[in-house]
Each structure stands twice: as C-alpha cells, then as structure tokens.
Image 1 (cartoon, helix red, strand yellow):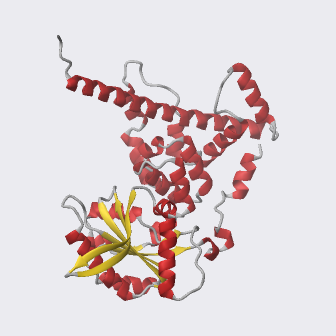
Image 2 (cartoon, one colour):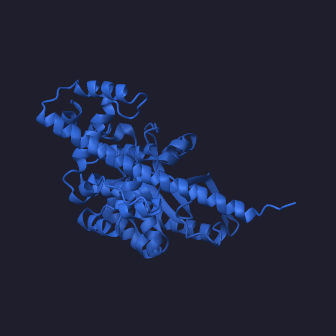
Image 3 (tube, one colour):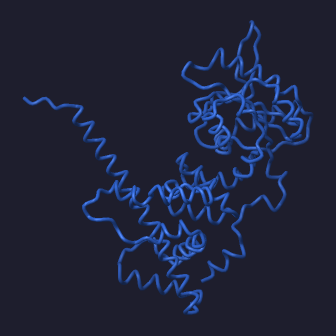
Length: 375
C-alpha cells in the first residue's frame, strides 16, 4: 500500500496558500484602480453635467438593474470613490499608477503581474517625492485608504499611517484607533534614549511603537494626594486592561501589574509589565500621577537591569521602560535620560475630561469633504 509523503502535502499546502495570497493582492490592486477610475468619472460628470445630490442614487439603481446583486456600489460608496480620486489626483506617480488599466500579457504569471504593478522605478520615485512606499500603498484596502484620507491633513501624515498600517498589518479598526490617538503627532515628539541604548533596527521599531501622549478616556480619577492617585490610576487601567492595550497599540501581551522582582532578598514591584511580540522585549511601565521627576528614571533603570538579568530570556531583546506622567518638562526629561544606560522613554497620559473640546472628537476636514460628499 502506498504511503503518503507528508512533505508532499506540506508543499502542496504552501503552494495553495501562496497562490491565494497572490490572487488576493492582485484583486486588491484591481479594486483600488477600479474605485479610483469610478471616482474620476463621477468627478468629471459632476463638474461637466451639473449633477445634483440625488443623481448617484439613480446611478446605483440602474447599476443594480444591469448587474443584479452587485455590491459595493451604493451611492455612499461612490461618493467615497470620488473622495479617493480627489485625494490622490494631484500626486503624479500615484495618479499614474492607479490610472493604469492595461493588463500584462496572458502568459505572465500573477506574481509577475504584481511585481510589474509595483515596479521599482515607480516605487523609488514615490518614496523620493513624498516618502510613500508604493508596495505598502497597494497592500491597504480601500477602507484603510478612506480612513487615512478623511482623518489626516498632510501627505506626511498619510505616508506615516500607510507605512504603519502595512508594516504592522493593522486592520481598519486598529488604524482608526491609531488615528484617534494621533500617533503621528505623538511619535514625532516622544522623548527617549532608544538611539543610544538599542541597535539601529530595534530603535527604529521601538520609536514607531511608543507615543508621546496616551488618551486614557476610560480613567476617572478624583482629586487626591499623589500616592493614592497612582494606585487608583493603576487599578483603573487593570480593570480596563483591554482598552489600555488598545491605546498602546498591537502586539502587546499583559504580564501583570505590581510585577514582583526580588533583588538581594528584597521585593520590588513594577506597576505594569507587558511583552511586545514585534520588539521581542519586556516593557515595564511606571505610572506617575504628577509631574515628571528625574528620580523616576533612576528607579526605572534599576527595574530594567533586574528584568534583563532575572526575567528576560536569552533570545529576547533588552527590556524597555516607559514612564507615564500627567505632565513633563521636555528639557528636564532630555537631561535626565542622557545619563540612563537602559532604553527608556517618557510620555504623558490624558483623560477625556482633560482634553480641549476641539480634540475630544476627531473629525474629517469638514469643508472640503462636505462639498465632495453632497453630490
């Protein structure tokens, strides 16, 4: 009786999975190009034919008659396609890419088609022009792109979130959270010593993970003395650990609160300890109800040394410390972290009540988008 070779099954499985992935990527590229083309057509018709606000409803109805069961082409979605087109039409390289409609020769493979779609010449041009990696651009779904367009104000912001979403495989929900937390702004102002205490590759990754400011909108703290408040803050975070981890970002796993380490027969307790899968590092977080003080950094430096010696596994990267304060003086923080020999960052946290009214809800650019969406 023939004995089935398991390696044959594994190879077959891998080929099937690889093929599905290639087809999915190509389908997404074609969808982006189709939606861009539809958006362009709607823009042209709206401007030349003086379309009213209800015309797209009629277009949708006629499309359903011609293509029964057609999905994704509601009036609302076609408005979004028009927004997509208007957002990128003035960026020559991306407009050129999304406007391509001719396919390669039938004899070429799907993988070759994809490589042609994201050719190195166009990719390098776009990265040089406005720092957008075209491969990452094409990996994001239309829903991702629409969120980016409506929640950002500059091409620099778009480039940041495109890179973040593609490299970290963020779903639309995760991307919305990054946009809500304003991670682009926070990333630029986050104070740390990662460049001097981590390898270049690890430092680049860590800088993308952490932010200058975290919105803890689930925390409700009444006025009290500082020591009590820190305990209340920590307990509130523990009670809402899922929400807190969402505010931190993807890849965090909770290891514990009041995490005990023993050094020279003495017990010490770290407020919150996580493990980050992408960084392959233990993350120690200390919560401070008041303003940042230099002594906080020295204490964290001690915790990180102990974690590296007693907890970290051989294959893992150095532990990273984050001090979250209600307030911080950037100049004081910069002087302090210069003398720390472990990777350390200092950020702030805010609750919804502490934010200005204008920042409590993040809305699209109202004037421009309203004109586009009214058709």
